Length: 244
Length: 222
Image 1 (cartoon, chains in turn yellow, purple):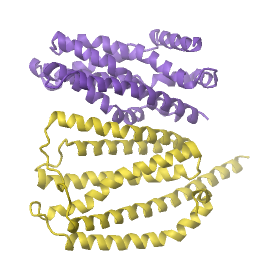
Image 2 (image 1 turned 90 degrees about the vertical axis):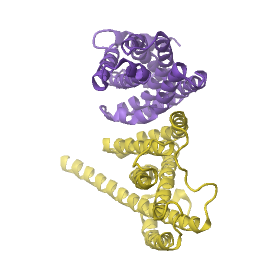
Image 3 (image 1 turned 135 degrees about the vertical axis):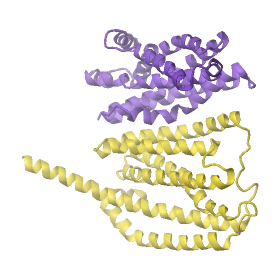
Image 4 (image 1 turned 30 degrees about the vertical axis):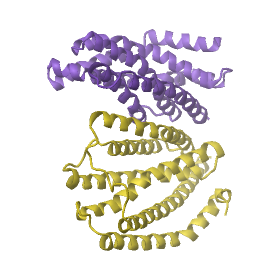
């Protein structure tokens, strides 16, 4: 089904109600397989012990935190360039999910850092850039919450998202520079040159599970948002009718 | 061209007259820098070491403070609509407005920096370096901030939203501004490396800020 067919909200609603049960099932299956593999099959690290299991939650969240912003940027292009009617719905529903994944990446990273580095937080380049990414997600959320007219807020958020997408690599580069300036690379790095398949396979399954979770939640949130906008329009029409 | 010159002259003139608030930013800069020793203690050696960072932070906050004036007054009296529908290209108009805004709010910060540096026990060389980095870096803050100002006007919301949106994007400017000042003062790096990156960031921000602000105004004012 081409993307343009889904521009019709009714058709999109029908499509989501058909596909959502399958997605939910797939997510549950992938999480079951991933958690069994991660908790019982994957070996403990010879240095880190069982705390290495945090990685199976942490890394998929970190990868999704970037993936969601990329998706929001594509949706922003959809809003500004192609005027796709569902693009700003997609962008709006992706923002809280992206913020949640980024927050989870930060929290799990910090919990992992406590036994490994002896502290919950270090101003490491990666941690700092993810923190800035989190701040930018919160900025987009604040923008969405400021204005009640969805299409007006959508265009503003789209521009902010695109500017953020251009700026994020620059911020990442600057933070890397700043970090090497202040502290030499004393912080332990993950994994080394290669990851053993016994860890890589559970990690990939968990990444798939989290991605499926995101797609499921995103489609469900988009469905809710479309319904919410319909209710809003009905309310407006009703108010106008009562007035006239 | 004459239209742009007229916009520039008008904005500078309005900012300098009563109610324009051109020097409020510089006053705020002074107040922030004066607050720091109360928090850190009057240790001159410490203040000298972190002086460039204090000046850059103060200038960043002061630059943010004045941003909402960039379009808000024009929207209130309707002249923004005239600029939007006028014959001059909107990108050039907003770039001119940002230039005027920098002349009236950014440049006073740069001029005030050596005096404040004196209070932080900076040596003449340190004052010169910080002033130079601020001269190069503050236009970047104005042009990045212009995106936030345009968003605030398009959404008819001001207040804290603007700094929240703008601050994360100002991080690279802060990093390279402070690190080039520190590189010149304590080394070991050469001053030119971070300084050229700061120049590049400013040029980049001028382009991004101009196009993004113009696009925001176009899309937002419909």
